[in-house]
Image 1 (cartoon, rainbow, N blue to C red):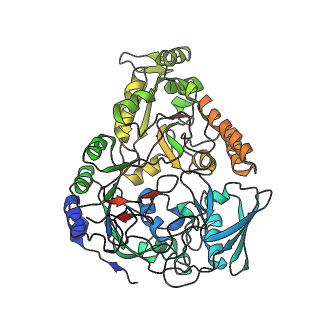
Image 2: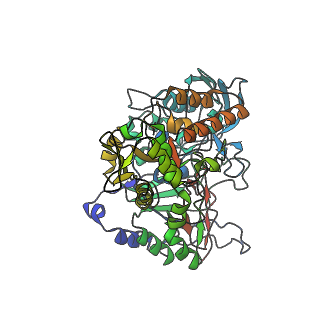
Image 3: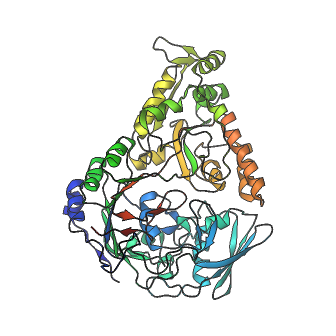
Length: 543
């Protein structure tokens, strides 16, 4: 199926409201007149879905960014499927597997009936090539290795439908890693391309239940159901092609436009309902969903490389000055539980540390007094001529991120610490946050339902939100990724969570959901365990 790829100056500069009105007009309803009226799924129709962030690169290995996953989860499958409720790993493109006792070798046996959207049959060679890129990178193609595949040594194709992966050290989290969106299997016409070309959605060829048929870059994406799709995870009741005929995804950053289009019937579903819009959605009789992201919760990384934060008592004081309950009560709803650990309460390996995170401004003042930080005429503390001042930047990924930072700043100022809040453009923000002397405080988050997520967030070789030089922390994180036993890993994850809190390296804020809303005629919306959208089971009631 060919892809229409339209680029116009008018489209690039159109107002968001106009774009939504045009995109949502004339949406056909379900077309299967023979479907029963007993609540059984109906086949047919187009789902108009409004995405609030701009998708960037569609390279499958780096597709954890939610607006990218909104598209890729519909067009690409994984070796395994993780149940979002039970967390059990099920077969998908792989019908079975074996894992060595020391978790250094994984052997996958593939289904023999799977084809890519260009007709190419799926083989072990294709799967091996995908994971070689994820685990080793490819300098010639400009591909970097990915954080969710660690200790990777290489692959071995044993026959057309059997592939083995070897690792330099135990990787107990690898089976779960084969279920994440970044592990989507793409065809040779995609993975042989350089990174810049793999970023282009029209070049992504995969095995999923939908294919890409129209692209207006960073604005609109049309996906069409594959009639021949018949390899859904076998434990699912739904088999065969997707229920929907098409999915029309429209990028709509403006909250009011997105919510207005939904409640007026111009759109069927949206991502990102701000907390203050939740009552509007519910009052209108629409469905509100808040699946949790289940990983490293949004939290304030206190970077010891910043001169102000070198001393432990200062970091401890800022932790005690932060009243996360007050922040959640002021800005959010019950869908945003107060965080009680660096891991969200739904994450595997979570440990409740709420007793160590309780706000105590009096204790914060005592710690700063004893550490020699004295209040100046403006109420801000100083020590040896240095003011207790820090700077943070607000990433766009966090709901009400600026408002959250402003409340934190108020709470810190009450104990004599000044927090400056800046909103640089994304490119500048990425560059500046590498320097802890500049950006001493950073709100951070990673979604993944495996204790390895702590390694991804805090190890000095990975995202490294702390800009860490802490060898002890690195050592603990490395043990999480290499201990073969589940209970051993969970115990080490608990040790890491305690280390982060006891050393006041992070201040957990709230457990973050992905918020979606849909009309009452929309059924079967689904998600990965971290809240990324899955539309294979979605269907539209006849209106």
